[in-house]
Image 1 (cartoon, rainbow, N blue to C red):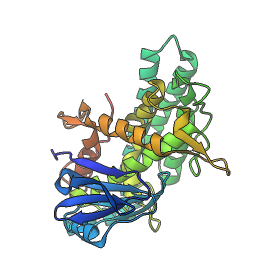
Image 2 (cartoon, one colour):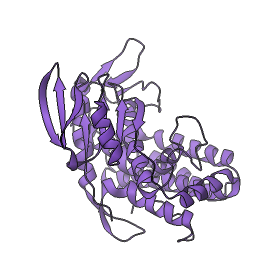
Image 3 (cartoon, helix red, strand yellow):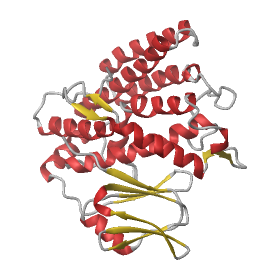
Length: 343
């Protein structure tokens, strides 16, 4: 199993990154703030408008260290990677499957089945742990709908039908998401999922962390030689990492949603960590981003036994494990792609 290194998150918006030998140098207004050994990092995520030196860009490209650029509030802008070294035979097979409606639908079904299953497990864990504090009959009703949606996902005869099933399942799941917020209820109310822009603090957290998970999935896919831009569920669109979005579907509930609920319920983040813009969008501020990134990095270190591989791995390696399994299926080494089912 692949070793997990760290990701360098640069949240100081007006900081500039450059290279000094094998060291990343972080400067602001000409003053050196930090120095980091480059060999400790597998990727860099840069927030804000200031850039990265050509020398550092070239070095990272040569050594396969992707750099992801996000706006100050976490909106994806661009991702820079080096020369693509994936297996050309594997990628050609990926493209063939993507163009084949029947074969791509088979993989897409598994992505959505994993998402619905794990969403149901999040609700089930809430009922088990907090039965006296939540609306158990309502949550169990939604769990029943999700169980039916899981069955239907395997029967979907088209991508459009599958997307409809996924949409209904998401509506059922997020329809009781507010029930799982047990602390700071007045400050973290949730009614519905809003994306661009997020209209409340919970959506701001979800969108921010989904962006980070997409980056991790793209890196994992590139590592095993797959093209993160050619998907099986999300169709091709210029600039969209469709396969990374596909792969993250099954991981959203376990990796992101549970973390969002945890940092709210443990009061690791508060109302002061958000800004509301004139247009009504709610976004994490600098201090809030630092808190969320710290919790994100901590959570990635937690160990879990992978349900298919039977190995104990860190949570941060789940995208890499699933990317490996997807590559093995595309090569024909296994009979089907096994989605990540949280046990």
